[in-house]
Image 1 (tube, rainbow, N blue to C red):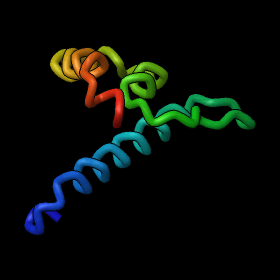
Image 2 (cartoon, rainbow, N blue to C red; image 1 turned 180 degrees about the horizontal axis):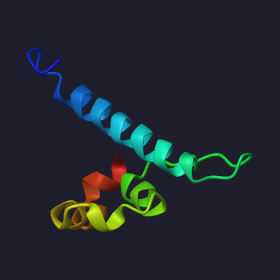
Image 3 (cartoon, helix red, strand yellow; image 1 turned 120 degrees about the horizontal axis):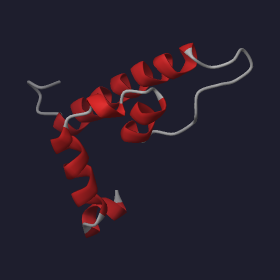
Image 4 (cartoon, helix red, strand yellow; image 1 turned 180 degrees about the vertical axis):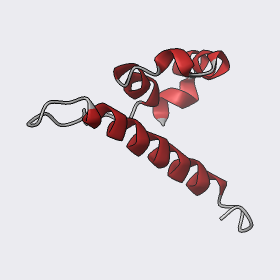
Length: 75
């Protein structure tokens, strides 16, 4: 995928991989009848999984900056 310059798709697949890994951690701690939340926000999932403090600070700052940009609100 990188060789064919499909960078957006590569980013999407990386996001999916991290999301699924976080949901596995969350589901491990859930009750039997409880399911992981149906959200895609990685920082919220990391917080729910108890891993928010391990997220690099620059990632959090980039996310906070993007929330206020006009382009990020249209994505």
